[in-house]
Image (cartoon, rainbow, N blue to C red; front, side, top):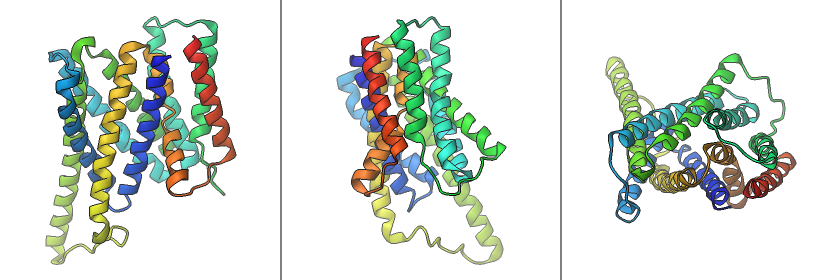
Length: 297
């Protein structure tokens, strides 16, 4: 029961982080937002470390760093595939793959459940698809490029969970330190490289690049605050997922974590007044039912 609670709450907090990050990207580039969020998340982990503890080791550093690399790749591919679209198909595809990859690894490693547990996992996977499905009028079929990027994104997110699970049980928050540090370093390098390229082009043409109409300077401060809050929420979600992995099975946590779009949808409805589609409501109900069955299994 406790493992299920960690998984569900962690997923909803992840969704909340995505919601905050999505608002921030209306004023800043997604890579800048991710880098800022990684930095604020790292500060939160450092502040909590004296209370949570953790043993430093080469294995903890290795798996934490690999989780940071896979997380950065997963996020980059996610933004890219959603930009290609259609989101209504590629978003749930990413979520399902992010669950199936670690679920498969967990089962191969010997995870076993009662029959009701397998039913619950299957039900949860259906819930992931329905929760992440956002009906779009006139949506077109996804391109092969978009599908491959969605699969790659989901696989990298799944690898992130596997890496965190493989870190030593006594490592505490140490893997998350390196996850945030490596993630932030990669995103920071991307932002600096992009800035350098823009400056070189500006110098070559003899004029500054025009300011983007979609990123007015007046909203930059708000975007920075949203990005910082996104990092705090993401660090909290990472902590919850880590606790769930230490107490339970990778297979269960991976499927529950893939329900993260539910948190984004709920906040969008409460804060922005966005309408929740009927199919998504069905998905949320199925997710609750699956969580209840998993607690029994």
